[in-house]
Image 1 (cartoon, one colour):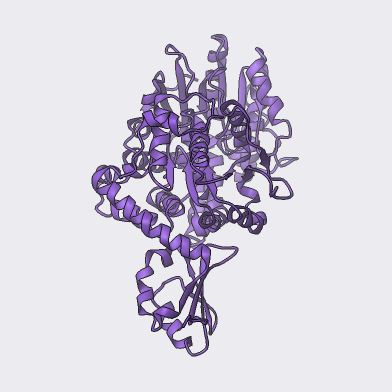
Image 2 (cartoon, helix red, strand yellow):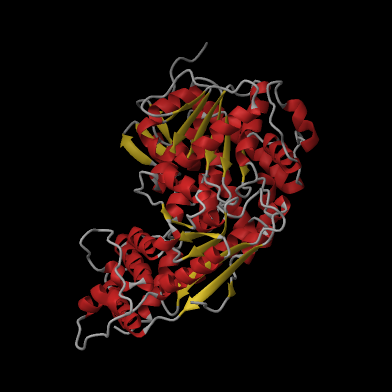
Length: 607
């Protein structure tokens, strides 16, 4: 006799990365006891509980405690996901233990797996990466920018489509990636698939759908239906943007969408910008219920070299050395602060140290302190109120004498009349030297008011300016690329650090300041050092730091993050960036350890 009712129904929550457990009358106490076995469990009512998907899939064995095993039913999505998780776990274990899987695809076999409509060329390392990604149900491509991750992703999709594994593709990425996916699709397919960029509505008939991270949450139900209506490949481009996981809007949305896709892939050249937790989150998207545990176990011994060996079978990475790029020179110039600047900085540091003593558990307050100190290390005048929010600082040439008995606020506001910022002076000297040689310069500065000030100071060199509020971004970039009189582009890594190539026009970059975001730093470096450079190209990067300021803390934290990422990826190029060569002068992604370092800087100041 066929059983009609169930004592426990297991289903995937429609709008979040949660599993819903629904018990029938008489099994309320059994549901309570089962829920207690999961740390993330949350009751909706006496008959219903929710558990984080990742934890549930990691502990499927706990279902053995249910008193009525025959009465457990699963919805289709959860049943498929649980079965696939078990299969993936076995496959990953084999690969970690032996370095191969039974279905390993060779690079030479990739051409035969692509459909007849594929016409794009693949380099040897791209074919290798495609083969590696096809060998597992889901995958990660951690290749450096310029290695062709977009083309590799399209090739994987075409191979899976040809094998009838999937029939549609959803790409989640920043707006800056749109052009690359659309242009690569035109180049790689004789008859390009229909590509739809999501605006107001999800096009149910699109074969390839592109959406940016900012729109995910608002369109989550529609995108979930789109993924579930046909076997789909879901690709996260610049996947490090979801590194906060369930603690962030992007991560929560991605983790909710992931289980609806038959195949999942992540693309990022900076998979662990803040350490192990970032990598755990990315892998938990690729392999829900298993990926996080694999990373945790690999890193548990504390030996990063051994962890790299253990994790290497799970991702593919083309390094800069494999691209045969000419070397890049990255140097740091430490600049002493002039007297008044030093006096103001130390006074501000004392004020913020006192404030931090009562707010060290308040991330928002500490975050503001970090911003203020980073600005003060450039020029404390950036903190003073101007006639407009982003009014450029007006420097006096020659400088005026400093009035006696001036207040701190007065000195801060009028500092440009008395002293030139060492960082601005150094930037001007570098740009002038480069311009005299016919070399264009990319100047990075985090803050808009600082960028506007630099725009005024460098006006002789017809600077282009791009920041988050720029309406003429494309026009400014085009001017920098094509106008021979435009010798400078001023921007910040958060705005221009991804999705743009400037290596054909520019080979010099200056960092007026840096924040704690190691991923953004690496991404921004690659704007001018990437595939396509001639062998004799000299690429020069100069990082400016103010002596005995928060810049020292930023340097120390970036060094630790880059060392970790370089070791876990077994990439010497990344490791070398952790130890910048010091050169004499000629003229923000935060984690708990960053705040610990900041607190040390603040406590070192006498109150």
